[in-house]
Amino acid sequence: MCLRLIFICICLPLGLFAQAKYSFSKDTLLMGSAFAFTAIHESQSKAQAAVEVAIAEVDRIERLISSWKPTSQTSSVNQFAGIRAVKVDWELFQLIERSQKIAQLSNGYFDISFASIDKLWQFNGDTVEMPSDEELSASVALIDFQKIILNRSDTTVYLENEGMKIGFGAIGKGYAADRAKVVMLENGVTSGVVNAGGDVLAWGYKADGRSWNVGVANPTAKDEVLLALPIVNQAIVTSGEYEKYVIVDGERYGHIINPKTGIPSKGILSVSILTSTAELADALATTVFVLGEKDGLALINHLEGVEGIIINQENKVLYSSKLKDWFADE
Image 1 (cartoon, rainbow, N blue to C red):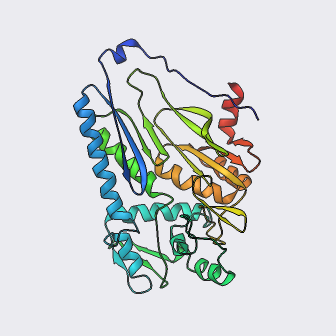
Image 2: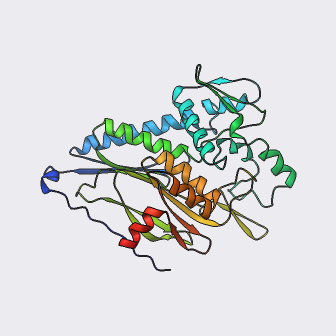
Image 3: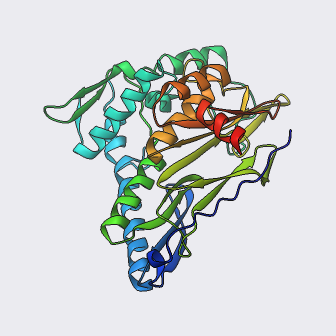
């Protein structure tokens, strides 16, 4: 396999960047992941202030949607599963609605109620043996997006069965990145990047007028960049099993679990999705990983404005239709 690194320089009229641009970047830990923010602005102090506003926004979202925080609305929904509906903010309600649409689109291969299986697989070294068939069956029985009952009239969420849980591990960071971009734009940052633990959202151009370039890692050597893509007003999200995994009976299991079986998915090393929002890219990257290369590519090619790169277990790189044509022209 031979892949070329792609570096694109966008040539723009000099007058567009006649005024000096400053770049301010900051890294921090949010939502259990490393976040990095970059803002381009004529004023360095305003760039810095916009980044701080974005960090505060991600922190706010984490407090709202995290199933790990007992005071979050998501935790309240989980706490009263099978008991009663819970009123939530319109923002969280809409996030659940959008998640449900992706669940329907994917026939349940994306499902935020997968969180009920979180006790069976621990990717911190604690899991040393396969869950039993009985444990898997009991957990999978609680995964069913159709049993997440939404009432728009009073913005309530009800999980029909006791023990059900929802979680936003496959979409939450993408949503947070989108919101960070919104507040940075509101603060005058027309060019910037949010890297939400690998969910990358870029808009505008660098301070020198060039486009942003985002690398796709080699899943068998994650410090090696297989290819770089020029990103303008797009998100690119990669899901892979090479960073979080466990070894059970000599076999490696990644952290992306098939909600139909309760077992980590096999067959793909990584999936990268390019589209307009980080939220959608985040959700689709997980979905395609679970679906596998054939069905995953079919889904990508069916969706307008979505492109993808799949690296299978033979380390072969597969492209969605438009990207395949684009690379062929290079």
